[in-house]
Image (tube, rainbow, N blue to C red; front, side, top):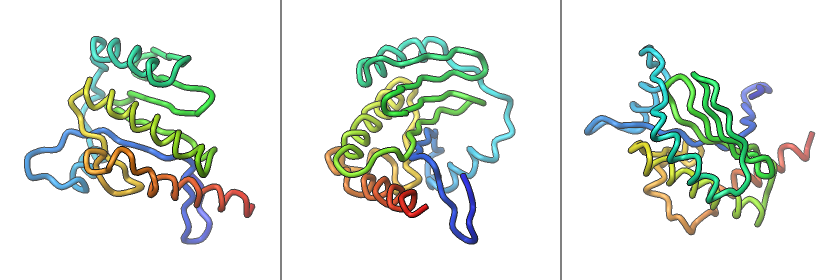
Length: 158
């Protein structure tokens, strides 16, 4: 991430996975996640062993890094990265694409997010759209693609 005046350029589209307490807002859950000073929770190896082949089923050929406390899945052609680090699951993809290519990428990103939700029991939150994945229509990639298009426009200006 780099800063220029008041503008912050984010280099990737990120999704976070949280467990909200009953009645807790998404904002409070995200804040608690960032401020968590609990010891690093190790990955549940059984969950990891279910996530990896399911992500491979969505993306195809992937690289897997298992170097506790860092666990990662990386898909080279899209840049999609699943990570479990410091007790937290995250999913990200660089803003490499735009238009129809970005729409296909968003579909893959959301499919991987669903795998993580199903296997971990956590809820996926999209901070770019400020919504949980469960409230975003799967077929509607318009808002997400607009983020990719906006990033592509900013990068082309440089």
